[in-house]
Image (cartoon, rainbow, N blue to C red; front, top):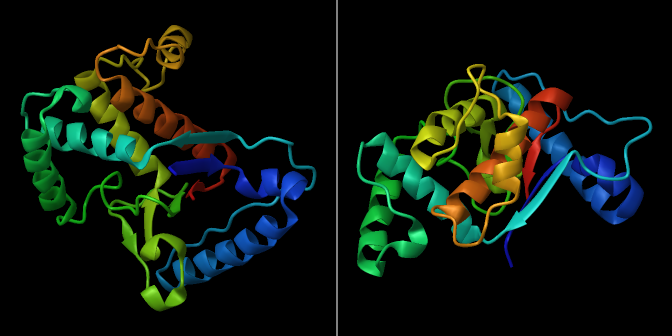
Length: 214
């Protein structure tokens, strides 16, 4: 079990999963309707001749997302960072309380999101949206902005030793280094998760499609 993140989900399902396509069309319709109630005009585009593969697809354990959130919170507080896999259980548990405290501020798009379902949409709004639970939107109705998530990832990058160009993009060399990390690289799980979310944000904003957690 683990988290799948996909950009271009309907495109892929149009070729591979008719039942899933019907389900997610309905799910996106509920999302669009609930967003409209909150004053946000957005819908998931459907492409007449969709590609056979999604724009971005990634899979990793749920714990990887928690590892990334942990370093995000610690870096935001100016605290020393250690890789999750090199941190003793007691300290990791104490850091988990810090994640909960920061999440309760309801400001971070990385933190305020369900672990296993839901959406980031390519609309720039400052704080995460909390849609009416009765609307039945996946992820408990918490919706993030792809643009704001990208900004949070960019802010975290230096703390993980990830080097962005002055325009906030990854060079081809840095992209390759992230894609080909050795298993014993410091912060390997955090960097891997960062890279998958970064790729998803980039594709979401370029194609106007949601990042789907499922």
